Length: 161
Ligand code: HEM
Ligand code: HEM
Image (cartoon, rainbow, N blue to C red):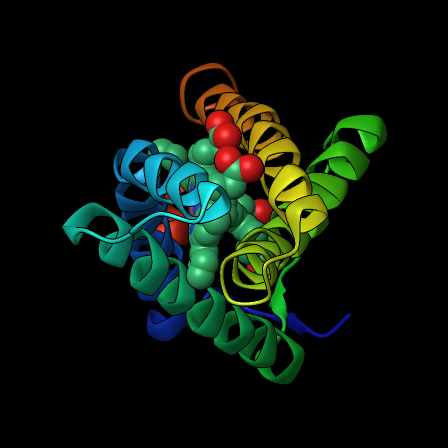
């Protein structure tokens, strides 16, 4: 993996932008579920909440692919030195899982909604639950660095390096 001195402004803006959009996806999920049930019964399925869910999700997919392209091109900073090797591995695997989920969740939603694939809808729900668990671990890690280790790791996602 390429190493940089810090995350770029674009990487930081995209990290926090995607976090906000994920919240919007969650807020609109009940409307989406109603429309999905209606569609499968063969009745009218639409509404503002549904449109928000679909287009916010499509935006997340595009931005996530842009993040992966930026990471491949510019890399990411190395983890702080002297950390526990097991926790460092957990952090790396967590990042890989988060990147995979923010691509696969909207992709499965698109396959369900536009392709009518029920199995993709089931996978969408399952992967969202996985995202909540992995993101919880990620946030716990960030808080551990901020308040226990106090090593300034959080600043890497605040100030471009
Ligand atoms: C990262 C972006 C997205 C997130 C976080 C997200 C999240 C969710 C959540 C939490 C549910 C409710 C699951 C349940 O409890 O049943 C849901 C349902 C659904 N979403 Fe998304 N979604 C995203 C993107 C999309 C996109 C782009 C589409 C389609 C274009 C989509 C289509 C659907 C459909 C069809 C359902 C109903 C599936 C079912 O309940 O089995 N989603 N989504
Ligand atoms: C309040 C919530 C969050 C906080 C405080 C936070 C904080 C951070 C910090 C400090 C880093 C840099 C880690 C490092 O330098 O090694 C980071 C990286 C990352 N975060 Fe978050 N994050 C949050 C939510 C999320 C969410 C919801 C996602 C899900 C998509 C996410 C995805 C990522 C990814 C994929 C990376 C790795 C970036 C890379 O190395 O290319 N974060 N986060």
